[in-house]
Image (cartoon, rainbow, N blue to C red; front, top):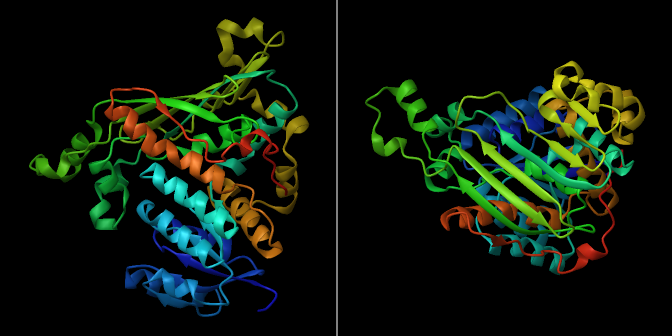
Length: 405
C-alpha cells in the first residue's frame, strides 16, 4: 500500500462514521491504518464496517497518542467531541502528521493561539474541515463575487439554523457532546458553517480581517419545553436547565468596512437553513428563496419578488465554479450534497502531494474564536469584543482564497 495514503481517525461517533463510510471507504488512494475512540463498541462496529467493505483491518485504540506513534499513519482526521479538537490537533502537528479538524468553536482564545503557534513551530499542515466552503451554491456565489456581479460588497449574513432539540435532549443516551455544551455555555457555539463561506467571499485573512464583534442571546426556553413534552412534565427541573440561549445574534465588523451577521437558532422548531445573504452595491443574494436581485435588472419586481424566487438557477450556466463543473461531470459523491467528498478530497490531495491545505490554521483559529468571543460579549451584556489577528499581519499580503478541483 505504499502508493496509498495511510490515515488515522480519532473519534467514531456520528460524524466520524459518516465520513468513513461516505468519503473514505469508497476511495482507492486512501486506507485506514488505525482508529480511536473512548468507547469499545464504536471500535468494534468500525472493524465490522471495514470488513464488510472488503478493506484491510485497522488497529483500534482508546488513546489517540498510540496512532501518532505509527509511522504508516501519514494523516490524521479528528472527528471527536469539540472539547478535544485542539489538544489532539496540536499533538498531531507535533508528530508531523497532516492534520484535519472537524468543525466546532473554541473554548478560549488561548486554544486558538495554541493552534497557530503549533503550526508555526512545526510547519505541519492542519486543515479545518468546513464543508460548506465547498457547497455548490456557496462556490457559485464566490464566483459571482469574483466576477463583480454584486458590485462592492457591504454586508453578509448567515446562520446555523437547524432544529437540534432531539439530538440535544437525548445526548446522554447517545453519548453526544452537544448536551453538556448547551447546559454549560451561552455563545455562538457553531459559527463556521455560515462564517466559512462568508470569510472566503470577503477575503478574511487574505486582504481583509475581522476586527470586533458584539453578541446577544435570547432566553433559553425551547429545550425545557421540548424535554418536558418528550420525557414527561415530571422531568427533573435540574436536568432541563440550559444556559444556551435559543437565538444568538452576532455582528462582526471587518477591516474593509463590511459587516457580518451570524445567527444561531438550534433549539426552536424550524426548517434547516444556513440563511446566507450577500449584499453589494449592484445587488444581493438570498438563500431563503434562492434568488438573486440585481440593480436595474430586477427593480420592477420590488413588490412582487415571489415571482422571481429560485432564479438562482439562471446563474449556474455562466458562473458555476470550476470545482463544481468538474465535479458534476465526474459524479457527485459523499454526504451533505457532495460537500463532504470535496472537502476530504482537498485534504487528501494536499497530504499526498505534501502541499498547503486550502483551509488553513489561520482560518481555523479566527473562525473558531467566534465561539469564545461571543460568550464573552454575551456575558458582558452585548459589549464589543476585539477579535485577534491570528495571522500577525500576514492578512495584508496573503492572496484571496482559492480551491482547485
